[in-house]
Image 1 (cartoon, rainbow, N blue to C red):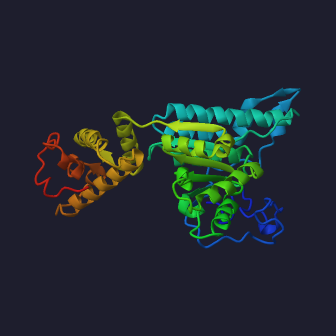
Image 2 (tube, rainbow, N blue to C red; image 1 turned 120 degrees about the vertical axis):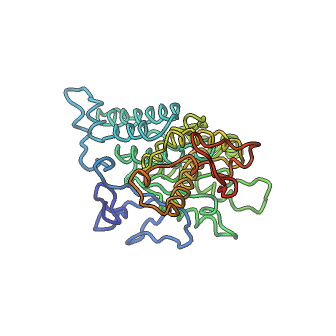
Length: 377
């Protein structure tokens, strides 16, 4: 684990810490001494890069000029030196389905690598526009991909710190006149050198309410997306139709976003594969009957309100663990390792999801005593 306050290259997250060079954004603390001061009101989430054999940024040790020899550029040397391929492989390995998303991320990574090589070859061009829009239903992987994108941008030197600041409207919009601009600028200061992820960004704009202060936050973001584009990448996320309405109402915002990536819904087979991966990562196994019961659960759950794809599957696995633990706690016998790691069908079929069906499916291969009486969520 990197020391607190340092990024994965060992450089201070605060550029002035440890006597590092000052890098102050215009309008966001320029001329101040010491660490930037932040408001105590911030309620968002900051995710910093973690050091490790698989995830450590290689910015400090990469000499991109080494990829140029005798007037020729070696693309793969940049990929290897920056270890961008590790992030792309991690996306392929850990994210189920999402083929269109993975393809777009690879295309953006390719653009960034070639841009660095063009720079080293002395070809003049503007820095690529990197602000993005992620659209799709909840739980389809938008935040996870934003984190991986932050890692790619960090490794190739497009952002200095590689952290992600995740916020919603409440973190940007104030409650009275004169409150919103300072609040939004405070969030921007936290995000400089990284990625600012704005979930459900369309809630910033409420056209029906003339006294709403969200438009002021939009104006600040419009400014910094242009003036701080060398030091900040903004990713806005939400439902596709609402994001389209948001961009139509704020054309300046839409024109600053170069990459629009849609995250498709998962089907039942993909959700079951996600569930199996989650179970395996947590050191559990499902019996064959439990695996079939889980499919029955997913087929029923996708029809219910507030289904959130990967998040709903994660919650289902957590509740199955809870029921398994409760079952074993009352077993009144010695437990084997297999007992401790195995999810049985009844751990899934006790879900209240099955209460809405005319006839709840019987456990595959075993009775289901008192399942309805003990139904969980």
